[in-house]
Length: 75
Image 1 (cartoon, rainbow, N blue to C red):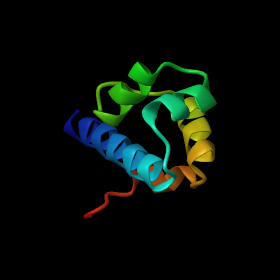
Image 2 (cartoon, rainbow, N blue to C red):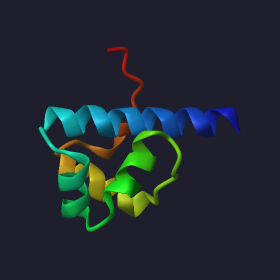
Image 3 (cartoon, rainbow, N blue to C red):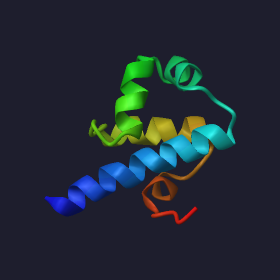
Image 4 (spheres, rainbow, N blue to C red):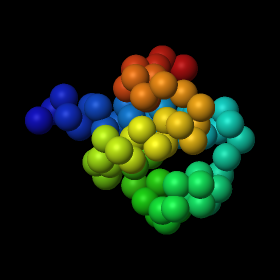
């Protein structure tokens, strides 16, 4: 179960990283994805486990490949 939590944290940190890189607010990303900003915040904090379909939509909105959202970053 620990590995799953780590993946959720890595996913959340990467979404936040690429969101900043794309100069998007949580509100703007939420608008693009037709979800609430609260939902984006929960994902970024590792508190929500989005579906694969939603992860694919997030990656598309952030202009990255899905796998990039699961690579552990050291910056």
